[in-house]
Image 1 (cartoon, one colour):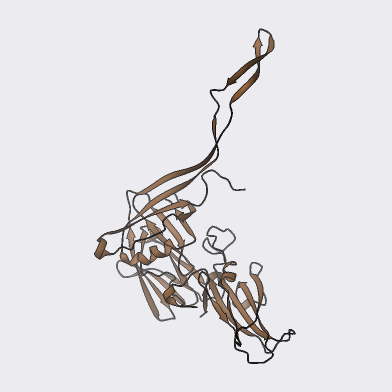
Image 2: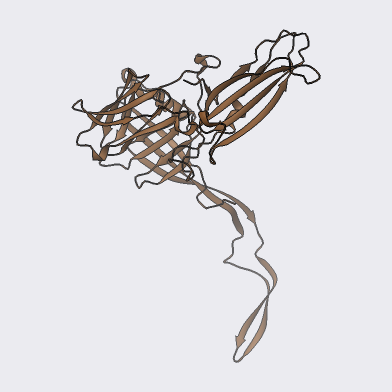
Length: 383
């Protein structure tokens, strides 16, 4: 099981202590590899590898150094949900292997001892403050909450950690298994986040839970609530969660779409001291002049650079307070997409900057309202 670097939070590398009096600096080589860890010597054509070399001198008579590497690694991860080059629509360098090789050197560049190598798995997640420094908790199902909603008849998608998860079972209301997905253990970086799916439109009965089997015999149960919405248009929100995996949450109730326009204006002169024009007189064309006039049909106050952004205000409908963590992670996500009732998916940005957690005790029935701005202009201005 890999040690995970969640690249949105600091991750520190501390070199082994070196007591030699000749110690001058440490060399830290960070090698990023997108492919099969067991096949580094013969990478496939779509694999990727790059190395970054850092040097750092110890201070205050210390015998080792610390280096923060998460920001370096994060710049090589990609979350393009619609990429056509990848094996499915959710993955493009969502996981990468990171080799960190450290070695002490003398001032003349001579190595003092052999290098120390550690291998990590990088994903674009984050740790909470209460998790502490360098938290590397390895999840099974890569979602926080043990409760989800989905639109009845839609496809359920559960992101799981293929390093430790063995099987994903979709259990119906009778307690029997509607579908069982076996998860193959892998050391191939793009396959470690496995999106286990079930098309519920083919099932005779509703799904009520998903059982994750990991470490061969351990299990985790996620409660599932199917929702059938007959009146409002349903939006599916897909966002990158705490663990660096895409997760779905639905907005079932009232939706409002608006267009906000931004424009610039300037005053232009429509006055003509001498307006010259041609006019037909019989069979001839005569030149006419009109002095000291202006047009009644031209814009004296002219707009330019006019464009707009579309905003959607969505309502979840009634949800369980067990989903509060889900909405918290949505609020701080940097990658959010909406899929509308026609199946079109597009990138959006959350306009909300705060969220008041609701509970059944305080609020009885819980509904969240959120505003999303489409992440592109209404008029195409891509250059």
